[in-house]
Amino acid sequence: LEREISAGIQQRIGPEYAGPLGVLQALADGTKLLLKENLLPSRGDTHLFSIGPSIAVISILLSYSVIPFGYRLVLADLNIGVFLWIAISSIAPIGLLISGYGSNNKYSFLGGLRAAAQSIR
Image (cartoon, rainbow, N blue to C red; front, side, top):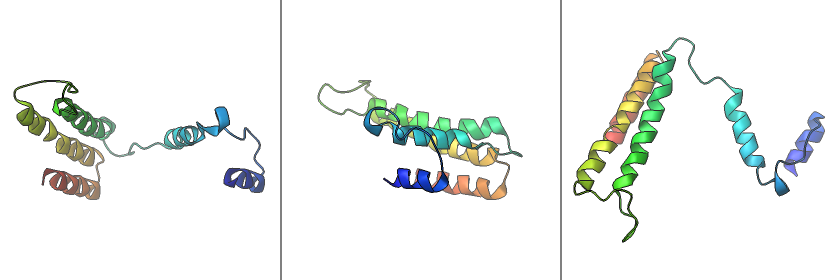
């Protein structure tokens, strides 16, 4: 209802919903929002800025591979599971530092340092 009223006020024409019964509308709106704006800094290092969050996310997702979720529900049954989990989890703050440094802004760099310090503790 809110979308129809907003479209009527703004005099927009277009589909009323995306997908069957509008199930995919939130996904379409989120994709449009993410692709609409350039998120890379103009003065910073774009490679470091874009690779930092991916390092953090990949290290966290890899750390879940050694956690047993059930009796037979484990991705990697290793004898060094806890130590590997600690080692992989300690890589995530490096991604925060890299993205803070890659922005070429002193306040973003301090924010990255602060986020890394909070995630270590």
